[in-house]
Length: 254
Image 1: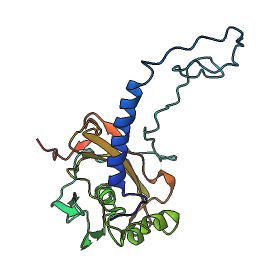
Image 2: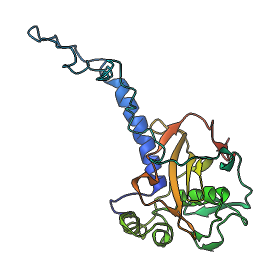
Image 3: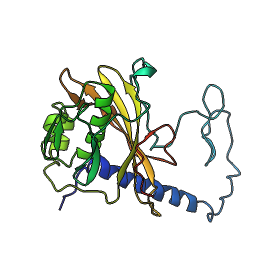
């Protein structure tokens, strides 16, 4: 059995999706049955000094208007330094692939032209230095991280992130039953980096939505695609209602 520790990307995606639904459910049940406490008759108010009333957004110090800052902890954000992007470099359709192959319980696309060029069991390497290669590499990263022995040394630069993944990748993988990769969104592509959102579908339950996505950032090290070792390399899982804006792989079960 896998001891307590950091689960893989896809395991975290399933757990976080369940947590989102549970949090929303709790939020919808609180507050309705609570008594409103009477105001303190001796309390005084000073403009700009008191916090906003419960349930209201805090006012912006300069304008007095509600703050525009997002407060949802699960909202994903773009990389800190998104380079100037040529829209024509981004994929708006699925690359040509040979088919789908299993990576520890999750099917991932493969292509003779774009990669992987080497497959040693579930350890895959050799993705093309192109938008197509980066997109397929991101699919593999989503499925393999934490689940495939040898992945960390091949895919993550030396440092804390590699050590973290390496500490867990020899343990038994934790597959997510029923998960399929449903689509992708090519957010950024340059010669040096790529950002790809991987959308997944799972059977819907009361605690878990059907569709969600995880953001993955890759860097080109001069020879191969690797996972960006900075904190911006990925994101919490984000639930979505449909695949609008994503390239649909047309793999959602009917």
